[in-house]
Image (cartoon, rainbow, N blue to C red; front, side, top):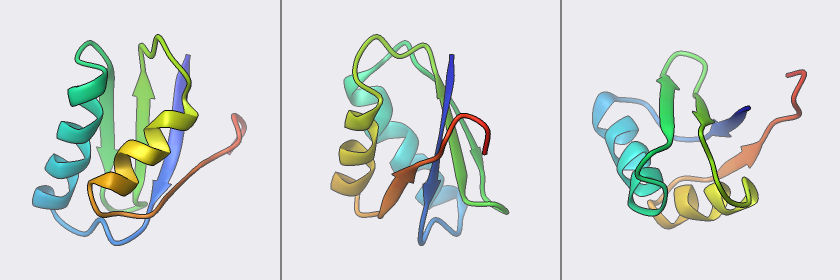
Length: 71
């Protein structure tokens, strides 16, 4: 299942790298896709609570919110 997050202030590849690294630190096997234009992060392969991803992204310095499955 793929979970999507909207990440504010993610403007460049460096920002995307910080977000990806933060997620991979907790979930090394997760597949993370970033769309800088829409500021969306898609994560699949999670074994835990997807709500924790928001916390990980925020700890990396970005505000985030999980989107509904049909967003």
